[in-house]
Image (cartoon, rainbow, N blue to C red; front, side, top):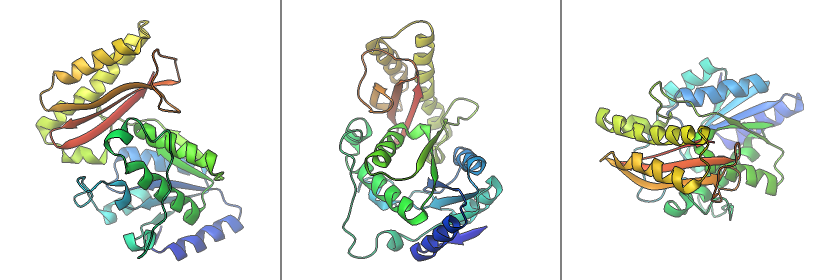
Length: 280
């Protein structure tokens, strides 16, 4: 497997792959890879002839008070995992390759990015759309695979692809969970054993909402109230939001529309910020 660290080399490789009429899949990551990421790589390998995994801790999607400096970086281990999962290339540029001195161009999505994460992290999606657009231009993939756990990110990227006519098929893979229900996340490693137990409140609240819908409940206020109640029973958990939204637009919904509605949660577990969601 080849590791590429410069934009010029990655663009040259992308041109070569296209000249050979090979279908290229991209899995954008920030590293610290877990089984959820590797499932994305395996899905890409099923659908593409060649798979590129980008590993880049993107500074522009972190606010000044967030965990950019302590975000785990373990490139050697990540590369080994990528190779085992079926990746052909790892694109791991240093920050000054993506944002060279004097960089001043950013991309924003103005509607889907506003609610939920956009309220408490107002600059986050500007960083996400900017770096993903750059990765699309650098790697020139035919398809890109993202995880459902980052549901709002997926919706924002899908809108960006549509609005800006990127010739990229956005593939969404289901959320992978630990056996106890906790959604896999690189930030889970920040949790102590006690905090991890408390963090299970997020998936428990989502599963309760799913069960209520299966039993016939459709009203968003009742689903949100029950989910919030479950979260409130855990003293280390501080709710940021619980919302029932349209999975494509992130607009609030008064009632569940099966397959279209999504219940999303963000919460602090002490100092660790976690998100999770489930399609109803």
